Image 1 (cartoon, rainbow, N blue to C red):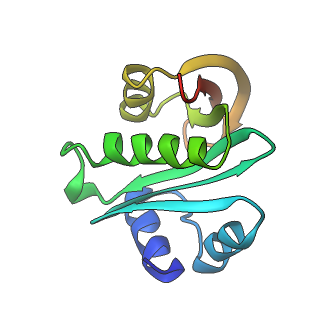
Image 2: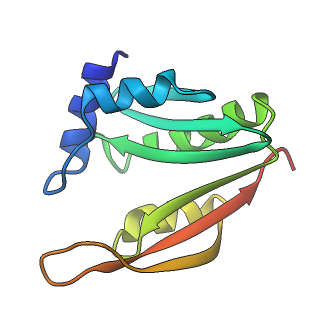
Amino acid sequence: MNPDALAAIHARAFSGARGWSAAEIAGLLDAPGGFVVTAAEGFALGRAVAGEAELLTIAVAPEHRRKGQGRALLAGFEAEAAARGADAAFLEVAADNAAARALYTVSGWRETGRRKSYYPRPGGAVDAITLTKALGT
């Protein structure tokens, strides 16, 4: 999938929020350690550098949710990060994103911190929750 296709999926997956542009996605992929794992209508974008990996975003088109794509993309991200030498991975998720938080919890990710009032929302900002997972164990 090229950056334009990834940006289109991201925009649909995060309707109501500013989706990432094709140029932003291309820049992340061109940066050291950048990689993408794709599915039919979804992707996980990450980077692995110096023994750590970061899940930058995971996006599944709304009509393809609840079919296991998110779980498969997350597992693919973890496998690719480990293959690139990462021993641990981290991510950040909005506190009000219950579906993503449930996916991460069932997949073995653990909360390590919070950034108070990080994500702006119409009714008031919500916290960012930071999570981590050991890879290859």
